[in-house]
Image (cartoon, rainbow, N blue to C red; front, top):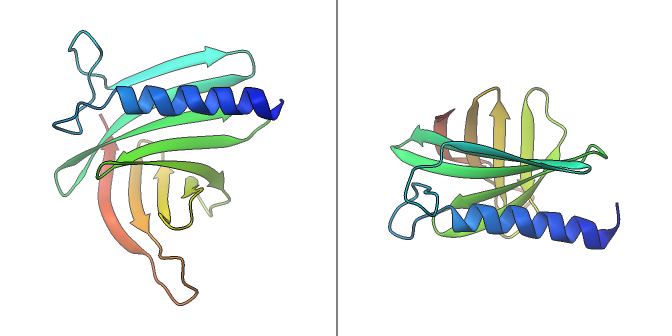
Amino acid sequence: MSKFLFIINLTILVTACAQQVKHDSLNPFHFDGTPVTSGIIEGSGWRSKIVVYHCHPDTELQVAYLNLQSGESFAALYYQGLLSLMQIRKAASGALYIALDEQKSLRWHTKGDSGILKFLAADDTATEQILLSDCKAI
């Protein structure tokens, strides 16, 4: 897949995630005002899915996933007013997405319909901090 096509797909993913978030809350809505709990969009060589999670402490988190036919996987995660683009990395179990921007250093680890959001500062001596736990897809 060419870089141009990849950038277009990633732009669609980011735009879809950003447009689904209502400005006064983290609850996603369709343009007609109905809540979004999940959605799948497929194209030639790629598949995108939006999932909303309910996490502790009482927070909803929206994640848009992009899986390419080549095996690469990405996620766009909206947390505390920031959109973080992430790429999948090897994990002992489940799927581990790490922010492409090391300064944001978010880690999103999913297993089945559950997830946990962590932060790891861009420092060799840093330890992971849990931001959201017990996330369950709704």
